[in-house]
Image (cartoon, rainbow, N blue to C red; front, side, top):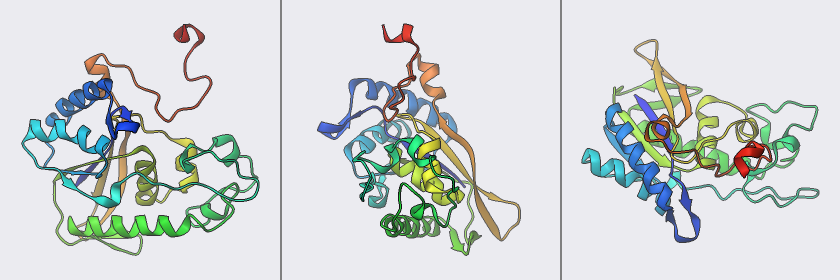
Length: 241
């Protein structure tokens, strides 16, 4: 099975939908996904994800299935000495990497600047929801592997969000979450593909074979929108003029 984790197109947050440019992104994305051969579509309940998924659903004649657990996360970091940066995945990478200790998959929520266990519980809930979702699709988690109860060659599209997508990938790939947040970015309408890789009949392990792909935008002559990138050096000086 292949899972396509798709961030929604350019968002119109105040109106819970996508911008005019986002509609162009979503249309280009649908053409790309048609060539992939998507078998089923799942979506976050939020409008920006549903409206992005709608283009692919209409083109392929599929009915999106709403998965409430894939909605955008509302996680923030709180505590003494922690500035209010809004979403936790937008916290400056320079702060995440200022300490001497490397975060691990087990202790990331106790490594500065996170400090506390307050994010461990919601991450565990996300993991349980992920396990339940994959079990419904035929892959039952046992320990750190997935037993192939009903393996399939289906191509599954999940339309979701930037913060959620990074966090879900961290869970599937066993990457420290803070490393995923500070080291990677999912552009609007981007596609990340996870293969439930089988090298035996019994077990599967998630393997990321594509992260944040935006080839559909290049094919349509559309630029990448820097939603969620706060770097001062994202553009060259000539591009800002």
